[in-house]
Amino acid sequence: MVETVRTLAQANLPTDYESFVQLIQDEYEGLSRRSQAIARYLTQNPNEVALQSIADIAAQCNVHPSSLVRFAQSLGYDGFKGLKDLFNRRLATAAPGFEARVKALGDDLQRHKRGSAKGFLGDLVARDITTLHDLYDSTSEADLVRAAKLLEGADTIYIAGQLRSAPIAIFLRYVLTMLDRRTVLLDADGGLATHMGRVVRPSDVLFAISFRFYAKEVVNIAENAHANNVPVIAISDGVLSPLAKCASVLFSIPEGEYAFSRSLAAPM
Image (cartoon, rainbow, N blue to C red; front, side):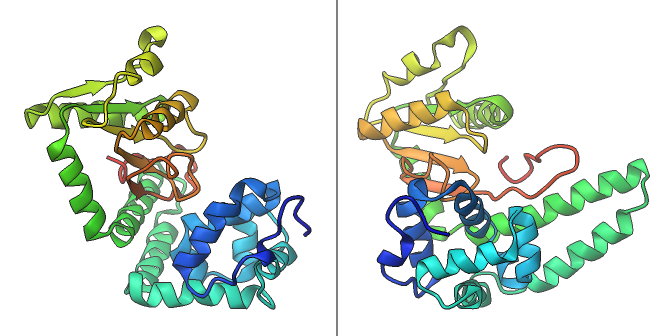
């Protein structure tokens, strides 16, 4: 596929997963819609990509396998295998034991496929368990320490989360208030959240939460805070989230497919 903007092949060939992610972040806005869908899945599900076949990955991206080959070639690889090797190497070091957990999840899901209410509940629980494992694998000690220091040193902690992220924002306000921290929830009621966000200062911290499809007001608040040198701690679904560009610390929680609703187990 020929991109309408500068092609990825003009950049340096990524030699590890981290450089691949950085390249995708830099080039994402210039990609076609199909390539963006591929990029989102690859960056949000690196563990799964390492274990899945090209056909399985293509199905998850809703594209033909040949689109994955062309995507990899646009990066400078001969084919998709060269790109997939980055994910294989990452899995070996970043998430040991993941393959065994995937098998256990598959066994659990198969066991719960009985069409009953209890089986449906079992499906939700099994998926939440694997999402929590993914959260643990993807969260670094450095990010946790950095976030804790920002929260500890903040004059006021502002929290922005709307739509299905609203329960997370409300829970964070409760926890931080119980810890005797000055906390303000930028509530959408009355349409004043954006205006309230303009009073956030560099000595404060903004905690922003949003998942695809991103709440526009939360993204705007985070962008304004970042432009005014306010530290932003973000909870979102991956490095291609609009919150990632604003974040001093990003806690990335990829979202799997749920038959009923997206779960808040890992974000909470």
